[in-house]
Image (cartoon, rainbow, N blue to C red; front, side, top):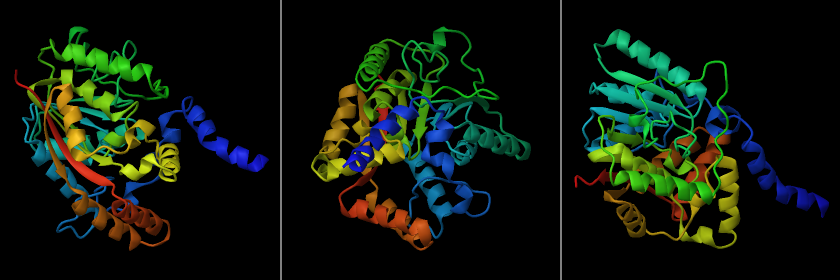
Length: 339
């Protein structure tokens, strides 16, 4: 009986522990090497768009390009969040944006991406200004004044500052599940009504990562709005849980996934339809286009991993079961109104 109690407390203990540990110790992506799945120089880490793709690298690039095309946005000022080893940054640089801001939660991803981008500039005649930021995707009000999504950053001096970790580890970002959600959403929605400035983004691009962002997807999406110029676009992919996760044993599975994959429980909230999801963004003030890409992503991703055998087979099998259970993979284009 005592053993069962200990096992039941493991998720709680882990959630408390991660608040005091650096991201590079607690994020699942810190413990795998993209080289294991990719070919050549590519280091994609997304689930891929598998129509006409014959390899993980091809599918990863296809998903990135399709999302960028779906965004259909100006590229003068671009913010790429959760860029990983930098493949998506190289994709943006192909169109020579005036300014590109890059956010990664892992210092190792920032370092790798910087090396690859520097090499790209040696081989191409690009003129893009870059800003690097290592930390959480979501800013904390009254704390993260240097964050690329801090609504008042344009009034606090030069926004083109390189922010990165060298020797010191950035503290683990901790959100209160209730207070900080309210603070973030109230701050950014108020600012969205009035803020204008030369440092607003034309495109905020998030490839296969938004469901990881604390304290919730809604808080993050709200935080982007005041940072977009009128007509600017937030483009991202998301994974939506099925209604079954609101009932046992699905609720236990949601708790396990939240703990193991560092996905906030609020982002696993179930029972929401695609129309309800779209309406929630429209209520924030976005003009929304939503596409269901499930059949283009899950089957190919699952088949590729299962064919690799061993531990990858298990991950592929889980992806296969997820689709069968009603999980959805969606692409979202959310545009700030021009008025």
